[in-house]
Image 1 (cartoon, helix red, strand yellow):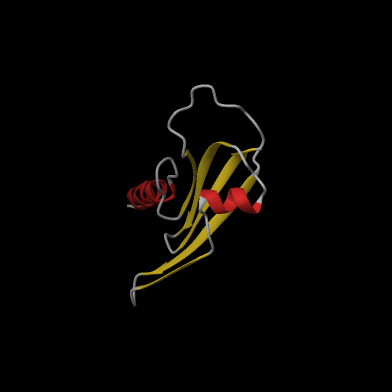
Image 2 (cartoon, rainbow, N blue to C red):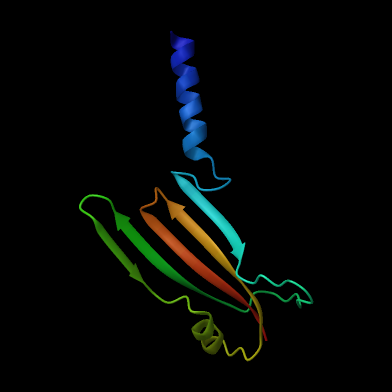
Amino acid sequence: MKNATFLLFALAAVVLVSGCTAGLIYTHTWTPLTLDMHDIKVVPASGAGDVKHVVLIYPPLSAAWDDAAIGDIAKKNGLHELYFADLEYFSVLRIWNQYTVHVYGK
């Protein structure tokens, strides 16, 4: 009985903590926002902007603040030419979500 309970608990923990796609407890991924990667100049990150998003299931409540628009990030960092952008997604318990846009250019 103890082994079956432990096995069930271990299986549930693996499912909840898995972060390959979207874990229920913690998720941290990077995704390119640029689809055409042909002839891209590789430069260090030149600027970033993020949006924080809090979601409560009960009572249904959602709040988001800050700005992650690519044009605003470029203007704030003095960029005149953008090469590509990445989206970083961070989530804890799907309550705290943070979307950060990293732009690369000069």
